[in-house]
Image 1 (cartoon, rainbow, N blue to C red):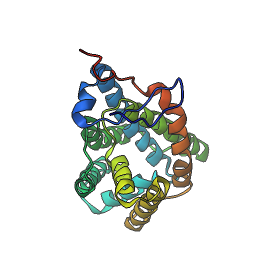
Image 2: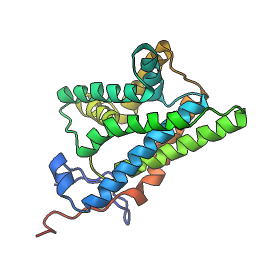
Image 3: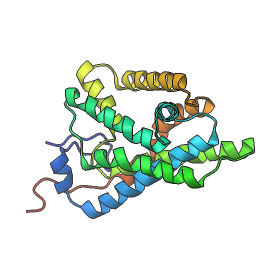
Image 4: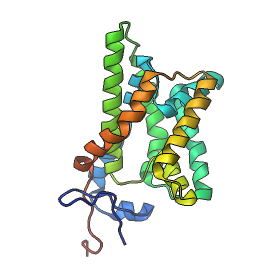
Length: 225
């Protein structure tokens, strides 16, 4: 049985599929390309927000703080945090897909590659522009990798897993997680600020608006003979 997160008439739908079903659902080449490009863009826009120095995305406050205390780059901290989060999936009985594993690795690599060539702007106007570009680009990237329908990112799965196990509203779980990681990251030396607040308020509505055209329609069960 398939349940859908987007059910409005005439709109593409996200299917609720297990890891093997995701791979067998058709259009795999298109979905793999979209997943890879989405994750690469996600890492690049993560780096853009960091270079704006006006406050990182909530989880990246933690990643930056980790990188200051461990022999890791920012991207390395993203990968390490992803691995730890995936371990938390086990008691929550979440099932990672191919996209989940790719997310855990590729975002960190793309972030480091972008940070190596992108310098922080000097003027405030340029930093604000870079922040806005990073937030909007990050929303596009999120819509792209979610729309590929190959599994949620590690942090997305942690949020939905906690929601399912605790019964708490999804918004409460998300807010609790993000407040917690920002607080811990700030104590470790990560940069939080207006950019953090902007990201937290804007990313959800932006992704919701951008997601439908990125959702790849999957084959209906039994349609492949």
